Image (cartoon, rainbow, N blue to C red; front, top):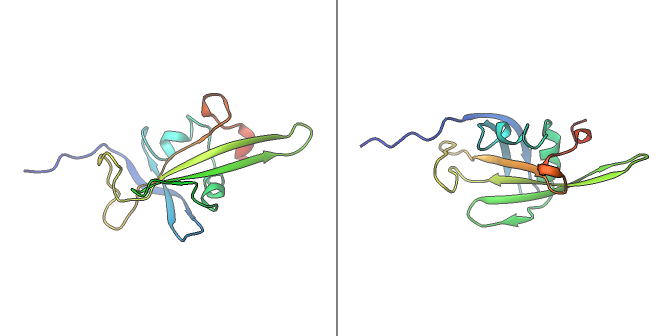
Length: 130
């Protein structure tokens, strides 16, 4: 009996970062359900530095089953200052919790989602991408 193939997704790496505990976190291109292709247009995150900023900080939530959450804050200075809180969610295991996606032996899924918290539709403002 052959195992059923999982959903199609692009495992190629788009971004890389390392957290303070030495975890190498990747962001794969993914598909419409996880990874860069999931959140870049939906949440207006178009540069890796947003993800890297959060991942370079401490883990804010660890479920001890591979799901890590990193919180970040972006600050816009000038005449109309603005502060935006954002979250980066990582699956730091070979497979997703639902077992649908497999990064392959010795690999991790990586960033599955990223979004801004105090913004309409969790969409980040354009200034964050500069």
